[in-house]
Image (cartoon, rainbow, N blue to C red; front, side, top):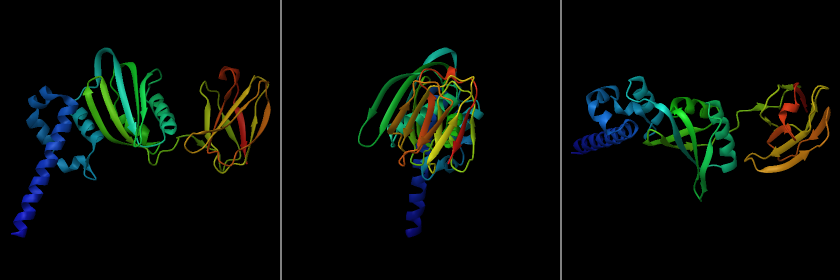
Amino acid sequence: MVKIFFTVAFLLVNLYSDELLDLKIKSFIGEKIYTQNKDFIDIIFTPSENFYTQDKIDNVKVIKTLKDNGLLNLFFKKPQELNLSFTTNGSPLFFLKIMSDTLREIGYYRYVTVSSNLNVSEFTWSISLNSEYATDPIIFQQELLKRGCDIVDIKRESPTKWSYNIDMSDGYLDIQDLYGFSQIVLKRSLYAHWLNVEGVSTLEIKSTRRNSWYPYITYYDKSLHLIKVLKKDKKTKYIKLNIPIQASYIKISDLYTLKNVKDPLILIPK
């Protein structure tokens, strides 16, 4: 009797898992494509337990399987307005920095914030941009993993409207760590330089004669709360910084434009 009970329970769990997976697949490719390819889908998604991680559907693996088998096309016939929504349980400031870095790495430089909302349990950020294709969750996941983040869930409301739930419990900035180095060379860039200064007490920065550098230095804690700002409205060839104890990150820029910095900056942490 007990054996029969566990057998029935096992079958019910499997049926429920298969149903959840089918619903997720259907949400990614639409009812029509799902119905037309039902037999093929049953084959490529067998066994269904291969598409679960810790009792949760592995959304990225599902999408990769659909893409590899020609069932999901992320490209549009012409540029469209793409709407993306991101939800997380972490610090909003820290999350926005991680997301902006990640989006830039996957080729999204110009986007508009549509809305942002913070409640007791989560933070949601929505953006829109013109694109010829929807975000590839596989590439997106690879970039997030470089920053200690992971995709928990993906929802596709339409070909141009996607939402992501992201776990950033172990998130960190994918930037240069100054600790343990005797010297760092910051190459010319039009973007501000972000660096990890944990374990560093002082930092010397040397510029060159060709540079017209007006230092704009900002310190942040682990959650990217602003600690201190240093501005110098004077061309600077050398500066020594005393790093605040609570600082985890530093942003080095120019008060006016980084076009002023033609040669590399030399950093000497101690």
